Length: 249
Length: 244
Ligand SMILES: Nc1ncnc2c1ncn2[C@@H]1O[C@H](COP(=O)(O)OP(=O)(O)OP(=O)(O)O)[C@@H](O)[C@H]1O
Ligand SMILES: [Mg+2]
Image 1: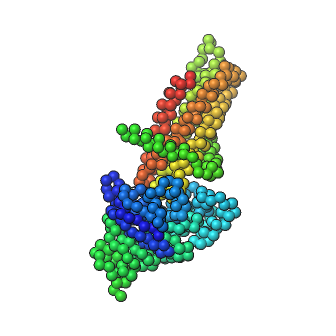
Image 2 (image 1 turned 180 degrees about the horizontal axis):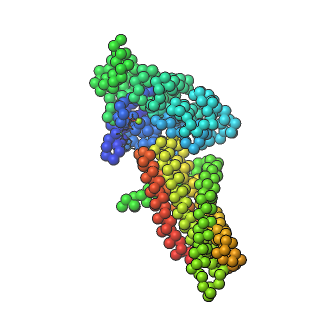
Image 3 (image 1 turned 90 degrees about the vertical axis):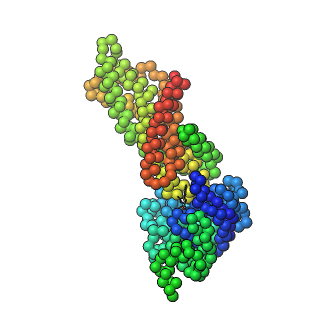
């Protein structure tokens, strides 16, 4: 479980996050949705500690992350996997080296053990055929898969995904979404996903938080979302033709 | 004021870079690979520039020192002194600032804007140390070798033109051997070590604090080269005052 309470964050006097309090549940795919520029990425990065909140507290399973020092945070970071909007694979390393990097940094495993673990993770994301390729040689979908493999290599307890399927075709998007959801269930991870894709919401949204201009505007499940009584949310949800039709039924 | 703030951030970054590494084995491997990329990769450029400059200096000296009162070997001596004292450290450092500095700033800058640095931070890595420290160590070890290499290649360039008829080759060699002062070489290599630190840390700084898009990466890399070059000039003056 990840919980944040009364989070505020501003840049150069401009408030981006306004009093956000949410609880993200374990073993579920929690979605943060909202329009471009609403503050999703900033919220996600604040939750993982890449941005310091101006105010408020963040809890990882009852441990107050915001109170911790550098050392103790590092211990928690070992349990965090993150998939960035653009993949953020290290350009100068191959897929194999990218996935192996967290093992090099955090474990004392032998090369053979590391190799086995990396191969297992690549298998899991169906990238076993491409360990020797560099990020520049991968397609968008492959980059996302490699990023997922790297994020799960240390068996994280918390998984953060910033628009895991942006820039992918609808079919590949669903594959990626389902992959993240099945990993979440398999290992009982707390997963938080940023997205503005209504397909993902309907496919894997178990708990959904709608962010609008830096405020938490709404939260609920995907069953509630089509019948929500909230103008901004409805505008967002029914902007896509498919969702309109879904309501028509 | 802005310069002061930048200097403050630079010092803070260096504090992060030189904090105790969490795992030496990783740094060791990275130092080796950076030496290969930043050091060995600069050998051809250093060789080409040094051999030509050595040749040209010898020709210039031969013309300038053309006088019955000046012994011919002085040409070789002057070439040697020019190479050792200034060219092979300061000028080569400026050239390396252009090559290596822009490379470092754009590499780290790209990593910043594509969230690769964030990804490292998430893995609990001290990203500043992980990215910059191996480059600093690698260049501080390797650049003095490049300077020494440049001295030798430059003198060889002079020898080539001497053989082509600019002067008597044996006189040239006598000049190279005349009044050999190892302190001069020590002085030059110390300068180069300092310049290596300046180039790498300054370029690393501009790359690390890049913000925005690829346009900004280009700007960061240009600024890195300009600032490193200026700092090399300033430190050249300081070190010369201090050591000579
Ligand atoms: N490092 C930063 N410095 C200053 N302002 C920032 C920074 N990061 C984000 N912002 C601002 O915060 C606001 C929210 O940005 P954010 O990246 O969180 O949007 P988003 O919801 O993720 O959008 P998208 O769906 O396009 O990714 C934007 O107005 C942006 O300009
Ligand atoms: Mg975003």
